[in-house]
Length: 163
View 1 (cartoon, helix red, strand yellow):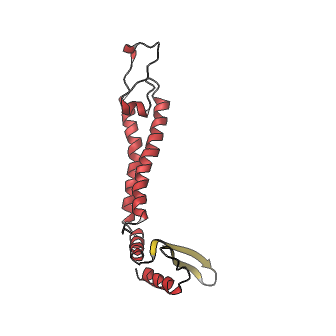
View 2: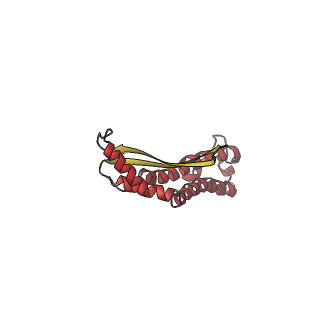
View 3: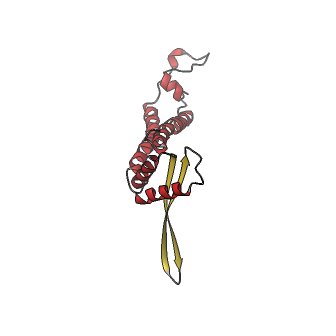
C-alpha cells in the first residue's frame, strides 16, 4: 500500500469537487437570475454558443455583460481557494502530529488504514476545580483478521503514544 494516506487524496478531491459542484451550480444560478439580456447559461459561455429564437433577428444578438464573466470566475475561485487553504491546515498543529502518527501506524504490516483522533474534554468539579482530559483515539483497519490479538493492539497503542 502506498505511504500516501486517504486524507491526502481527500483534500485534493475536496478542492476539485468544490470547484465543480459549487462553482458550477452557483455560476449557473447566478447567470440564470442575472443574465436576462442574453439568457446564456454557464455551458453557453464556455462553448461560446447562443440560443436564438426562431422569430429573432440575427443582428439583434447582444454581447454578454463583461461583469458576468468576472462574477463567474470569482464563483469558481472561492471554492478552489477554500480547498487549497485546507492543504495549509494539514501542515499545522495538531494535524501535523496526527498525520505523522497515522503514517507511522501505516508502516506496520497488518495495518490497512489507521484513523487517529486527538480530543480534549473539560469538566469542573466544586471539589477538584477545573479538569482537562486529553485522549487519543485509534481506529485501525487491519489487512487480516487479528481483532482478538491483544499484543498487536497494545503494540500499536505504544507506537501511537510514542509519536
